[in-house]
Structure formats: structure tokens, C-alpha cells
Length: 445
Image (cartoon, rainbow, N blue to C red; front, side, top):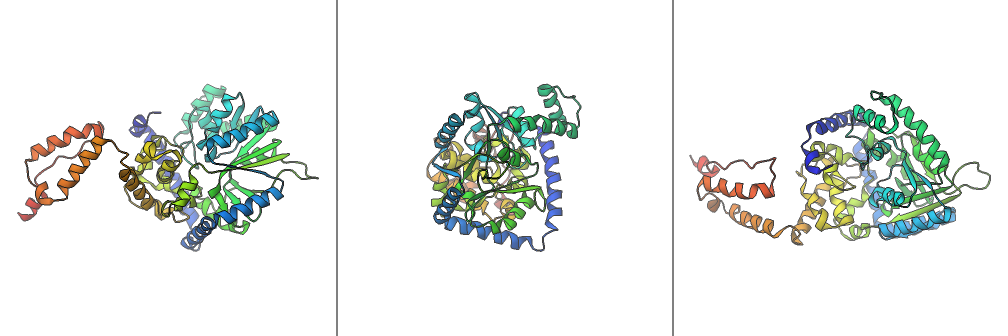
């Protein structure tokens, strides 16, 4: 979809605002279950602070314990290294069919496209992810990837793809998807998941979900591959009771999600189920650059709950696809320039009103508005905007910084000059308000 079309599509806006209304109601109900949610936020923030401040030691502990548990561990600097490692495993295991649970990290590296180019069938098994995969789209949201679609949209899509009734209700479509994917779980050679948390003292991954598809993605196929950013690490399994609760509340409004799994390795002797081989690929892709920055490293505390997207007034109105990035909303605008380059994605940090609502709802207290402002500063200092834009705003800044000078001149002349630069810098959908009599003159009167 073109960003311009989506941003001004009123039907699209109505759908996301309807779905977000359901989310807000659930979160408010979920908050009532906490005696002191602010204290829970503070504790969760401190857990992530400790993890970041001791990341080297915790990663060493994680890798050592994983290897002791029979897990193969690979470290990858970028997406190319991840895909090369995965390609080797696929060839070794002669993989032909892959099932996946929802994972933003795999979206980050374009995994589905990579697999399909190699003639490998790949199926998203989360219901929302399955829907957008069938529609040929990317996830729209970190937690609810099909938030932008109504039930009528999904019914039409399934009718076109699978021949189900054009007016099928959500229950019918869900039952169809369950039957369809059950066979894929049985046939799959490889299951690929992300990790909500990497548990250092256990050498394990922790997964949280509501559908059971992640559990089947790692327990049915003979090979289980985990692709996760190293920032998902937490010191101990004891912290999961806290982290799972704040993630569930901010993610969906639940007290805790339906399925929570701790996976410590491949199938052991005497066990009837589980993968024969388990591989964990720890992924960097710009995270180290964030870690080195005193300000920006705080963004690595993110637990991918999606709350900052849901409460952001910009996201509520223009939605996910207008960002043209894997990670959307406030957290995406902070992370993406480091992952994909400031020149191409630095502009995302300017899509913010600095209302600070994202900071208010973040379960690990990331100061997202401050990080967005820091990104803006870096973007400007590195002169990544166009020369014309820099010149115009330099002149404008000089003029408005001296009230007496700004008040000089004909109102009509000012309006003409604004119209001259308005279209290329603003857009044909919006207009700058006309200048009228200066406030200073009106105030004196």
C-alpha cells in the first residue's frame, strides 16, 4: 500500500480506531488486577536496566548454559549472517516446509521472502500473521498484525484464497485456519520462532502467546530454530512472573497470556515429543550501535508489547503501513534508523507530537520522546535533510527568533511566501494557516 493512500483512507482509519477502542477497554480492566502497576513498571524497568548494564556477562552465561542444554548457538552480526547460518541448516536437514510463530525479528531480516526464493514452503501460524501473509502484506502491528482488517475483509480474503463462504463469521474462519494449519504442523521439517525473553540462568528461551501455535511450531517439527535479538535477555527465570504480567497487560489487557513456555533444549532421552535439534541465532543488526549510545541504549529495554503504538495519536490516525518499516510507532521510529540507516529512516522520528503518552504507558519506562528528539538532533547535525529544506528552515528560524523582524512586512507577502514552499514541504492534503495581523500588534491594542 502507498503511505499516502493509507494515511487519508477514512475507512482504514475507522477500522483501526474501532480495534484500538477494544484494546483500551481491555487494558483498563487489566489494570484493576494490579495493586500498584506503577511499582510493577518500576521493577520491570530495573530488571531490563540490570540486563543491559551487565549484558556481556549475561550473554556469556546464556550461551554457556544453552550449550550445556544441547542447544547450538550462533552469533550473527547482521541479517546476511543470520540467513547464511539458516541456509546451512536448511541444506543439512533437507528442509522443504517451515512453520513459524509470530516474530518481528524474522520480519526484520525478510525471512519469508528468503525461504520462498529457495523453493521452501513457509506458513505463518499466528492467526493474524496468517491473514496478512495470505493478503501478501507485512504485519501491521507488533502484537496484532491484522488490526487494520475488519471481519468482512478477512471473510472476503478467505473466500478468494480458500473458497470459504464470502459471509463466513470469525468463528468459522478460525476453525478453518486451525484445521488447515494442523496439517502443516505435522508435515513441517522445521519450526522457527522468536523469543520474548532469553533466560540467562536457565540457558532457555521464554515464549508467550494466546493460540498455542508457537508451542506446536517448536514441538512438532524435528528442527527448532530461534532467531532473537540479544537485547531480549533477562537474568533469571524468577523475573518471568513479573515480565510476563506487564507484557500481557500492556500487550492485550490480559492478566497473563494463555500459553507461556520455557524451552530449555531439544528432545532428551526418554521424551516422546519435541525437536531433535534446537538452534538459537543471536542477532545484532545495529543493536550494538544502540548499546554504545548512552541515550539510545534505553530503547533496547523494549519488550515489544506495542503499547506505545496503541496510545500514539499519530499511529492511531495513520496506522502501521505508513511508516514503511518493520517496527512502527514510537519505538519503531527510534530503532529503525539504527537498524536500517539514518539517511533512509531518520525522518520517522519527526512523526511525533511529543505528547509523551508513549512514555507514560511503556511497561519498562523507556523515555521514548527524549529518544525521538535525540534522533531528530542527530538527523539535523549530520545534515541528512535536503539542502533546500535546510536553507528554508534556517531562514525561517532566523526570522521567527526575532519577534520585531517577524512582525515586519505585509501579511499578503508572508502568505505568498508560505504558499511557495508549502506544497513541496507539506503536502497537497494540508495547508498552512494564513498569517493575520501580528499578535504583538493585537496585544498592544
